[in-house]
Image 1 (tube, rainbow, N blue to C red):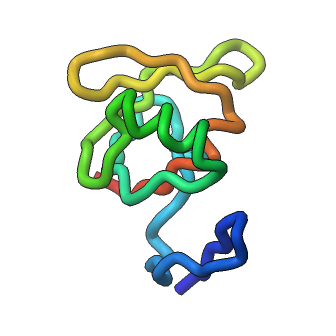
Image 2 (image 1 turned 120 degrees about the vertical axis):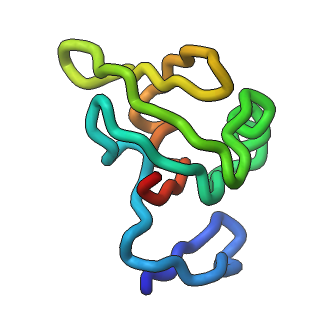
Length: 93
């Protein structure tokens, strides 16, 4: 189990070791969103784009230098910076 800190010092629930950040998922990999962490503004933006708990997604591809990455969810293709992808916790699908 790992513990994740949030900016205000509070703790999120502990997550099993099989969870990772979206930035760690390889192209072609499928995952399910567990939660989105980070500052409220960027976090809210990711939630509004559809990165809500339980949403299945697929990493389509990475740009030549690895940033940004293209993700498919809800039938849409979304480009995310690696810094944004590190704030999205996922588990394997």
